Amino acid sequence: MTVYDQHGRHLRDLRISVTDRCNFRCRYCMPAEIFDQDYAFLPKEHMLTAEEIGRLARIFVSLGVRKLRITGGEPLLRKDLPEIITRLAGLNVEDISLTTNGSLLVRNAAKLKQAGLHRVTVSLDALDDDTFLYMNGGKGRVQPVLDGIDAAAAEGLTVKINMVVQKGINDEAVLPMVEYFRNKGHILRMVEYMDVGNTNGWNREHVVSTKELLQRIGERWPLEPVEPNYLGEVASRYRFLDGGGEVGFISSVTQAFCSSCTRARLSADGTLYTCLFASQGHPLQHLLRSDNRDEELAAAISSIWGNRHDQYSLERGTGKIITSAAKVEMSHIGG
Ligand code: SAM
Ligand code: SF4
Ligand code: SF4
Image 1 (cartoon, helix red, strand yellow):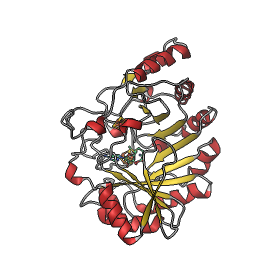
Image 2: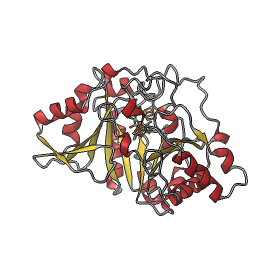
Image 3: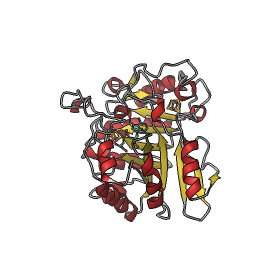
Image 4: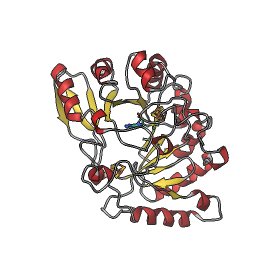
């Protein structure tokens, strides 16, 4: 079955946030002064269980979802993550991936692979501890993340690295990161700093555009564009002419890709969001925890997707939206 939204985009990907908690406090995502000891994280009883996540994912798959990504918060904080993955691996999907800050990956990589994970995206914003510690609120050094990347690769997981680039904060770290990951077989993707949520003090001046990054990287290591792997691929791909592999760019701010956005997002308490920048979600937990049959949940999800109009990034800057409007936090629904 295929479900289309109001702009003819089908539901194909599901991002599942398994926790809103994190052991890092990245300033662009969970600034420590807001996400402090008084912050009201989801109580455990409000979080979906592994079984509930598996059931919902199965229903999404029946509606056409082919790719599943686990995110958070930091998904590796969830002790039952291997069980969640095992449940997802039992579904008929093309791809099961995980986005993680990598700090706890060394000791978990084997378990994740055994559970059936295909790929991992590790977020890393610099190779020097000073910059990295500044960005993650003093919570994690670089070496454990690099070790986590190696451990995941040694288990046979495909690894990508996501780097959020902020002007004046870590743009000097771009070339060292490219140099480190070139020739390693892992694709480094540079992510434009986005105005997700309302707590990170986003300002367009802090965005380093893909155009600028392409120029800087290309001057050092000439690049050529590569065709997308599939329609709707989020990152634009470039290949090093010297055979050093590929880099990618996720240009949500300067080159919006809403027209091909097939992604739904589920928060850890089972609320469905149809856009990363949504102000409101659609709670599914009460449907899951009452006597509804799978068909009834499927009908509710189809109707939500069928009514979807979202195209925030396309409209950003057109005056149609105000970037300071109330929006869900990134740590609630994942990237
Ligand atoms: N904790 C995990 C991690 O960091 O990979 C998973 C959740 S995190 C919210 C998912 C991704 O969102 C990360 O790659 C992170 O860098 C990215 N992210 C968070 N805030 C962002 C922002 N304001 N702009 C761009 N990317 C952001
Ligand atoms: Fe945590 Fe990931 Fe957000 Fe950083 S980006 S605070 S690691 S959820
Ligand atoms: Fe999809 Fe919303 Fe991002 Fe546009 S802004 S690509 S609709 S998540």
